[in-house]
Structures are given as C-alpha cells and as structure tokens.
Image 1 (cartoon, rainbow, N blue to C red):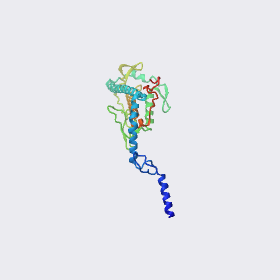
Image 2 (tube, rainbow, N blue to C red; image 1 turned 180 degrees about the horizontal axis):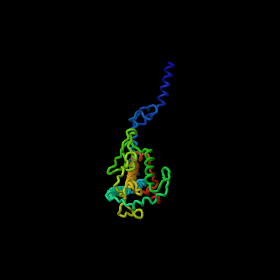
Image 3 (cartoon, rainbow, N blue to C red; image 1 turned 30 degrees about the horizontal axis):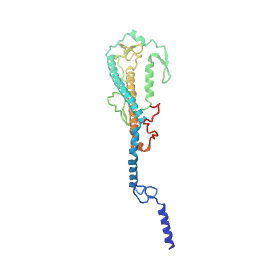
Length: 302
C-alpha cells in the first residue's frame, strides 16, 4: 500500500510538471524540451501567426516609401550605365587589337634597309652604361633592352600562375596561355604573348625587317616604319610582343571591371529581393507614430 501511494504521488508530480501544447486547439502535453507535442502543431501555429501578421506588415510596407529601395534603384541605374560604358570600351579594345595586328603586318611588308650610316645610329651610345633593373649588372646602352628582356624571362619563369579551369571568354582572342600542366594539374594563366615557358620568340632571320611604327612627340604616328634588320635593331627590341601585351592587359582589366560590376548588380538585386521577403517583413517593422505623415524620411534624405 505504501509503494502504491508513493507511485501515485510521483505520477501526480509528473503530470503537474508537463505543459500543454501551444498548438491551436491542441490539449496534449508537450514533448520533453519542446513547446509542442508534435511538429505538426508547431507548423500550424507558425502558419496562423503568418496569416495574422503578414497582411498588416505588407500594408505598412506599401504605405511608407522605403529609402533603401530607392537607393537600390539608383545604384542599379549607375551600375547599368557603367556596364554599358565598360562594354563600349571593351569593343574599342577589340578594334584596337585588330588595328595593331594590321600595323604589324604592314611593318613586316617594308623592305629591309642595310645602309651602314643608318646602322651607326645604334652604335652611338656604345660607351654609355646603364644598370639592369632586374639583376643590377652594368650593361651597354645599345644592348640594354635585350639584356633586360632576358632577365625578365629568367625571373618570370621561376614563378607560376595557374588555375584549375581554362579560360572561357566569349568573343575574346589571345588572352591567357592556358597550357595544361599534367604535373600540377593547372592551366597556365600568364599572358599568352609574355609567357616565357610556353611561347618562345622565334629567331629572326637575316632578311627580316624590324617594322616598328615610328612616332613623333612620343604618341604621334608618322606613318613610317623602322626598316632596319630585326637582328640589328636594338632600339625596338620585341616591340610587337610588348605592344600586344599592352593591349591584352588592358582588355583583361576591362573584363575584370565588367565582372566586378556584374557582382555588384547581383548583390544589389539580392538585397532588394530579400528586403520585401517573408522573413524580413516578419522580423522588421516601421513604427508610424503620426498617422497623417506617410513619408517618414528626414529632410536631408528626402
């Protein structure tokens, strides 16, 4: 009898400690560590709360203008304008790419001039010395460009620029090297024209002309070309490769700028979509103390 009375008292204490389920119309006790007797009761209560609160929040959202929404629209307009300007610049760079190839082809069609008096112009600075920017060695002025180019190739070959994926850019021609290395399982991401590992410069023949376009006041094209043999001309050493690299680098910068603008547009659109979403409307609320005032912005914002 004493054991039965003790068990009845324990059962009464357990029933008193249990709470009723918060589900709508539910009379069952809650599960241990929960406010509901089942998952269905929790889902029903959440649905009832949404149906009761959401319409009012939507009306409040529609009554008062959202400053962040207006700023987002202005940002999208600015981003679209910058995207249009960047695409226009990219088209101009593509045209400049083909113009440079046409200039190089015209230069290669010039006859070679082997006059000794013209060749003396490359030997005027034979006694002048200059220090290499890479190795610091003292070298003659007339071979400085060749020496610095060789030093650049040597030091550039020690570094590696790779990616697991090849470059796929629609409408782009000759940008990255993209040679696959089976050891590192990477694609080379140097500029194709400057890659010292996978694109070696061919040796110039004796009758190959330099063909570099001559300029006046640094930038004004004179219409003439250097007609010295390419193996002799030290003033315009590797001019085709450097001009091509300059154009390709500017194209890559423009493509990177366009990619950054696309990411900015995606972030702004995502923020504008989430701002009027279900979770944002349920968690945030704008309190309008004066019912006659619909625009809650300050004078500085408006």
